[in-house]
Length: 350
Image 1 (cartoon, rainbow, N blue to C red):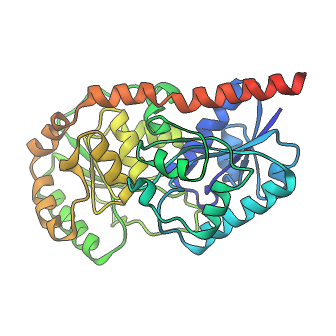
Image 2 (image 1 turned 30 degrees about the horizontal axis):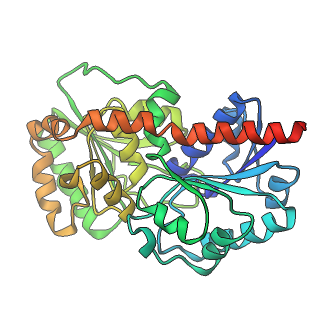
């Protein structure tokens, strides 16, 4: 049985890719043939997965399609994203292929979120079936479209169990901080401050992280020149980035899923001027203190990161008991998919 996996996988983004691969691996474990839309060819080869750049080919003979995670309930999307939804609505209707959005999310606005024309057309259309969402507030929005919806915490909260990434025991006195920031003027000033701190403090290493594949058309993340205490990490595949995140003492990021997956590995996450998605997630786990450090506070952030004790004590501010519980509950998305495969297989065999 063929199952299509649709998402924004053509940008080589860590958060999107890891969801695509995780859903595909789960389907393969169910003896299903997953096909992923526009996944990077090298990633597909590494994980022995099939991918296609053709939406027609993706949906041909597929028993159903899933939207494999993503922030598809946020308000503002660029034109290419909206065009993707237009194509999904049209081609899924032509192919009569039902689509199940799984672990999708917004920015905590719920029913107040204003979606664009083609996303509204899709979500209230006949091809869109029941959904799973990653924020409780998003249930009200999906209900407005007349669809059945189930809430489970973000599917990527399950990465330690699914990917079998162990928590790391600290091996040295060196403190390792992951920094993921865009190439804005304010963040360039922050990087200069961190370079200065690294030049005088030999016990702190700053790892500037790029969350896009080297082949990605997007090159918006800052990576200053390397030195003894300024290092680079470039995302090349989910497994190696997860293993790297597990070695850190703190992650500061403007991306949700880099920080979220770090948290699941026991590494504290501070959102730097981050998206509404990051704010909504951190609020949901009672970590308001880590939400969206604004631009005018970044000098204070540099001062904070210059003190090893601040970094080491950051972990104590998070309730990892709650995070672990959410991780177990997040398997609900995969269980939903398992039941969907079972029900479709049963109906096909009749």
